Image (cartoon, rainbow, N blue to C red; front, side, top):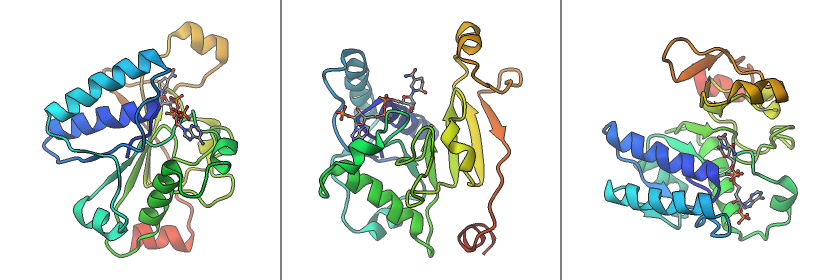
Length: 210
Ligand SMILES: NC(=O)C1=CN([C@@H]2O[C@H](COP(=O)(O)OP(=O)(O)OC[C@H]3O[C@@H](n4cnc5c(N)ncnc54)[C@H](OP(=O)(O)O)[C@@H]3O)[C@@H](O)[C@H]2O)[C@H](O)CC1
């Protein structure tokens, strides 16, 4: 599920990789990239062409029946919102807004108990605030999170099973300037596993031990 910002572009790239690895992804594009952001828009247009050339379907609307999604897909990649998410803007969106719908679909998928489909979030679980995380507690708790460059402040409360840091492209000058904590990559690795503390709640017990 891809949003209309850079996080969504990462989702499209993920779909391309999955296809090349032999999987059969479908992209649900919540909205077209904002044309007033020329660099990103160019990238979006190119990526869209590329994924279509790989025969990856791009849907602009999701089936209203969640069970249809979970029956046809074994894993959901959440690339709807990343650090560009604005919770105040979200709160002001009308009830029938497509971003709201996408976030609600993710929440519904996350609640499914029988025939559960894991969610992998890119950079931040959609609906989480960069600094304060899942502030009202009603957004998704994905099984896996891939933090880009460095984990954001808000994900200290990420209790999913897998957490990785990826995106080893922060120049040291910026690292020093902003005091960003980036764990050390091992050799040519592209990912760093971060230990997670799976919180023992009824929900996580059902998720991981049953
Ligand atoms: N910038 C970097 O150096 C890096 C970014 N990375 C990746 O980029 C994302 C952040 O990308 P950004 O485009 O800034 O934001 P999002 O992808 O989170 O998307 C915001 C878009 O969503 C639309 N939208 C709709 N409703 C809302 C809402 N309530 N709040 C915010 N945004 C909303 C919005 O569209 P508009 O048309 O409304 O402007 C935005 O287009 C980051 O998370 C990484 O994945 C990497 O980290 C690399 C470095």
